[in-house]
Amino acid sequence: MLLSDRRGFLLLAGGGLLTGCGFTPVYRSGTAASDLHGKIEIGLVTGRNGFELRERLEERLGFASDTPLYNLTFTLKTTAKGLAVTADEGTTRFNLEGVAKFVIKNAATDAVVFTDSVKNVTAYSATSETYPSRVAELDANVRLSQSLAEQIANRIAITAKGWHT
Image (cartoon, rainbow, N blue to C red; front, side, top):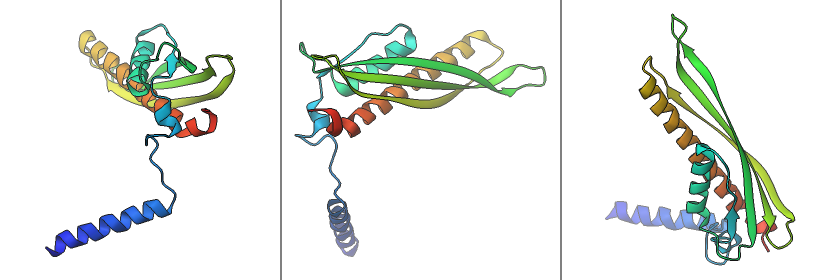
């Protein structure tokens, strides 16, 4: 019984601290971030990584309505760097770096309202076999693209109050 009382006290105290510091949930009803759901049209981009990034953004930001308020375009650059080299000079570990630059424009005026970039790194192992190495590389690319999309969606949500009217 005493343990339960302590938990209750700690939860109330923690809630009071968060309220006192001005914490406001980003996606609370009526916030700029929640108001943007389904109002950003995401531009098409070529390549598997661009497809994965766009798909995850649509999951997070919602599919654009018939009359979107904003258009989001992005460029994506990925580079692979060998990390681990065997005695016979074969590379067994790769870092995959990705940088996504994105621009949000007002759909009615085509004016830029927000621009930013995000960066992330993932890794994969390679073997002397071609197929498993290729599968690992593809999986790393998917993870990287999805991670970049999560960062973009978070950045949009956090900054929306400053540019969404």
